[in-house]
Image 1 (tube, one colour):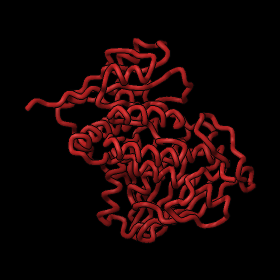
Image 2 (cartoon, rainbow, N blue to C red; image 1 turned 45 degrees about the horizontal axis):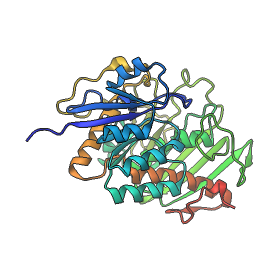
Image 3 (cartoon, rainbow, N blue to C red; image 1 turned 90 degrees about the horizontal axis):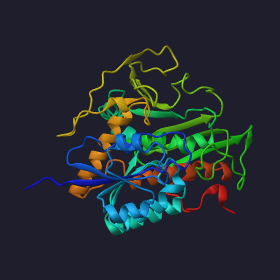
Length: 386
């Protein structure tokens, strides 16, 4: 029996200004039995370079035309802007095309519900680009926690970058990574209490902040949230604007620490350098005479038949950290295997919706000044509710 040949197409419209790419466009490069048939970009600027990087055979200026002409197995949706995702996901799903999509899935919880309903009806698989679920460092952290290396986990403390986007924008753009990791490690949240402030004052419904990128309703320059997870684990998220003036030089905030009864694990999430997993074996709080040691990390298994990763792509339309190349490859492979075995990918539409619901819960808690329980009853964005 011959191996299936996968036809993959890529959507990345350079006409839409963006802060950068996370390497999704090269996720399938080098995987066995994969051909990149088409590449959608409404412009043709720097086309030779991007076609060479993606190894795409044909260029299209229209997304739907590419889908209908190529009839691919998988489409890669690279846009950082969640408002771009809904239409592209639905158009692909209605054609039976599986999807690898940049996070977050959408800005609208109602749209997330509609996406899941459509994908369940069509049988299409969607893998979300939450790379921590495929990264060897985060996987080892999860395995060590489950093995009891730090005792009973008590608190997981996650932080955003706290740069010029600190607060609500940081929560939506980068907090989705941190919230998703917390649910991956500890299960779906049961409730949240949060405080969201702008210049020291509580935010108000209907008042949204201007953002660097079009990411939907956001508010606040200071976000602090406390989630309750199963087994009495507390999950914290914090972001404050302006703590980091130059994120390229002052790294180390974005990430999380997991504090247990026998020790603490710490791991930063960095797109400029590869992460290091650190372990304090002290049972005292980590701010009391803590001593951390680096944990040797075992890389994940190689994808059978795949070509070596092209590390020359780092910094060339991709982040500098090699974890993105590696994690994107594992995610792409996981999506292919999920299609063949009819299962959900490790990073899927369901846990992507949970991360978005957690963000909604943060705003709902501040606006109601109360503890919010999950799942949410109201699907409208709290900042837009009347």
